[in-house]
Image (cartoon, rainbow over all chains, first blue to last red; front, side, top):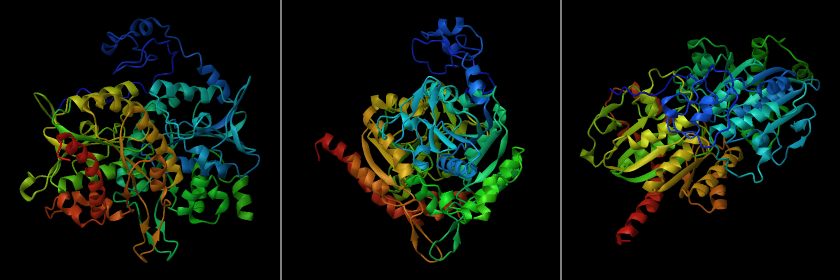
Length: 344
Length: 282
């Protein structure tokens, strides 16, 4: 049996964000992180050109955190959209949630896309060719509606197809800027779309927002066990990081043929799907959204599926989920937007 | 590093959930059915799916004096009927519990990728397929750097048809160009779903985007793979089946088997043509 000494424990997780010292060389393998309490003192640090810098750097708190807190202070609710598994519909769900929340003209919504390598949100919200305006008061989000602002690295790329080949620390730096330099203003909801996995982006967003407080995370999955396997790990991460899991959403849950309306399963829930997982690990199950090809098309063209097909089973599923989500956040079940939709 | 491995093929995407692991497994099955000895290296450290797909989730990795022994797929010793074999390595085998999260920053991931490349005793493997996580970050940068010395054959890039996927996969193609990794071909996965009730094909995730992208980038298009829920069910039900039929044989019944045979032919035409030229037998 291999007794492999892999550091499976997530010792970086509960640490508050500390000031990062100025490094003179790239971080070595097994680096504990320059902001860590152990920076410069671990075995892996021996021989690293930064060792002295890390060991002697002041261990005070990160001076950027108060700036993040100041920006976040005007935001009533912050929701992380996580998965662990790629391609389950985090960004799609985030954009649909954003459109749904912003139905009411008095509700201010922001979407922060921290998927640095695969930033999908701008395209889904029809803002792919926009760029960010910067002023003395900070970066302005791209407004796709009067009450819906978006921030993503995609807006900063000179060429849409440019690969962003960044290691962790650089990604973390940009995420921090999204939180402290963007002029979000007074928001009712800030939705934070994340990449798949449990890595730098997730650790960073957690540590940067620790002081400001996050309402919690919505975890998206598809019904099959191969997704649930990764989602279990994501929820394990949430527990270790102290992030409340507001609930699980099962996406691509069943397919209705547009020709014969026969129902079939594309992603079979051989182990009970999201609902069974939610029961197994004691988190709320918020609901299911069926697979509708029109959703993908709407996302490709940057249209709001929510506005185009409000009577569809997918939208019905989404509204149920929103009701459940609002309940988990301690908000009243209906908002102006839902009532307006019913009347129309 | 990887001295006894003849060909190294990366399976990349850029976009998550397009079926990199599914494609890796099917390429492995198809190559093994053609008599090749295949290794599968799963470097998706935070979401390792390969062990479950190959029904070796319960297995553990054993250590030998020279390094770690990859996990063998299937019970038989294979080659009796002209079939090759599959062995694999994944972080999934090393976790204490399948629900444990692996929450690592970049440098630890880089170190693990290095260990997987240098410390695993692959033996005489014809094809080492490397399944990767989505993105263009630490794992991909490390892999590209560390594999440079063994001159990998290149990358098979997987996408689904819709624009939201090809947008990310284009970035991956640019990544390959930047790091000098040959793009062997593009596979368009989840390309159409045939309704089991009325046999109408619906393009659930649109259609044609992968082929168009390949043409635009001037890279080969290996083919479109339809959605086939039966394949995933076949993988999921391996645990329950008691007929003793191995996945390698059972895969023959899948509708996707002929699709991947076609893809494999195109792959071999590129990877083995190079070898043939090199030996002067071209």
